[in-house]
Amino acid sequence: MGTAFTAAVRERARQAWRVLQEAHEDDDAHAGLAARNEWEDVQRLAREHGVSLDVGPLSPEELDS
Image 1 (cartoon, rainbow, N blue to C red):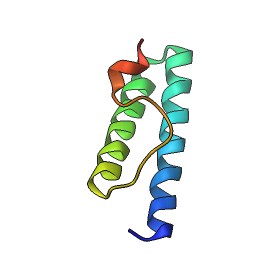
Image 2: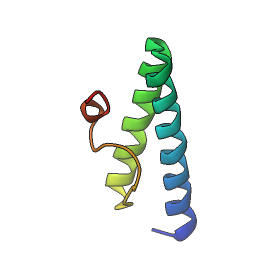
Image 3: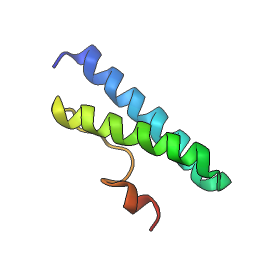
């Protein structure tokens, strides 16, 4: 994959992780659900294209621990 694509996926992951953390801290169930869906989507995209992510847990369940 090209560097621009990799950078874009990683930036999307950083943003998704930040929003997920904020929703978790605010105890906002609706925002948390939307953020979790985005986080899972960006993780799937990264896996499919071999992009390593250096933010967040490996699975949504790890966020709750």
